[in-house]
Length: 269
Image (cartoon, rainbow, N blue to C red; front, side, top):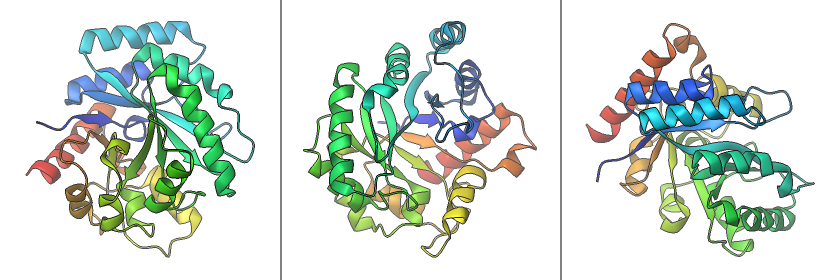
């Protein structure tokens, strides 16, 4: 069964939601990822929530192209957390047919984080969307083992998930054995890119790489081959390669095509 590929938000961050869908279609992707909720107050995002005209245009683009919305960003679980705050994101996600929402764990109190995550999963049940907890070494969920432990402490909800990003795999204390130990039912998609590997980067350096300077698969030192050999072969792939200096030299479509070509050549030969 051929892999399915999604054009991640960061790979097309200059596009509006309907533009991202049309770019994805022209470039050969089956899905897109959209950041409709900022990762911090005032941070970059795509504006669609409470904008019915943009929603109509996005739905029309989906109908015209057949491109689906795979994941939405982002829900952050902090020390104070109310899942109902994210109802507008989930309502729009349901309208777009989104499959997953990316979740970041910021609460350093792990039992409370697990309880909040359990409440989020319960709140999301009616939407039919999975809550995919991404481990990131600068958050409270630093590794794949941390993510698995939180989910198990939350009671392993049926819509729980773990998102594996190649960048964070390469910069966290996560091994290939840890990846192989993730139950298949928790894996809904994975993000691919490359970079320098190691665990001695500062938080600022890690965030800079993640948001501005990722490399194509095979250009860095992360064991991306080993990672994707350890993951299920039919797992959908979110192509998340943002490199602002390189992107400035191409159109959004050219960059999306370039990233998909590099990823497919890397994974499929």
